[in-house]
Amino acid sequence: MVVRRAVLSDAHVDRANAQATPFTADFQDFITRTAWGDIWSRPGLDRRSRSVAVLTALIALGHETEFAMHVRAARTNGLTVEEIKEVILQAGLYCGVPAANSAFGVAQRVLEELGDL
Image (cartoon, rainbow, N blue to C red):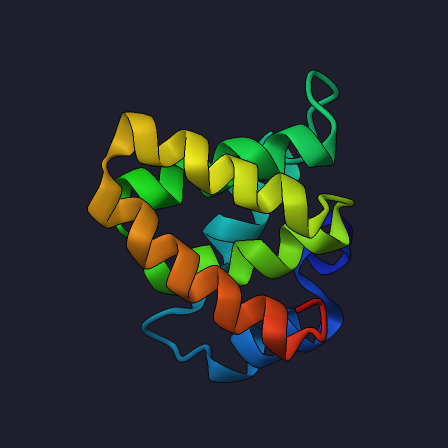
């Protein structure tokens, strides 16, 4: 939970937990233990590198809502606006122009909300 809160913010985690229902609570527990406790806590990559990998994967799979959340996390993890742009450009080459086009739209909205653009 410490890593999840550090990367996504207390506000995000509090919202996710508040929205948990008896039906979704086990999934929230799974995410916290597996994604944040097991994978994001491993020493093999720093958080910046993990953010690059996550942004790329989310672009490739077209997961725009998760992508928006992880653009915020990438800024928290130290990626610059320029580096996020480069990740999207790189992903555009390997994941396709439509995926990058969507990612640029989402990233621009998020970065404007953060006051970074």
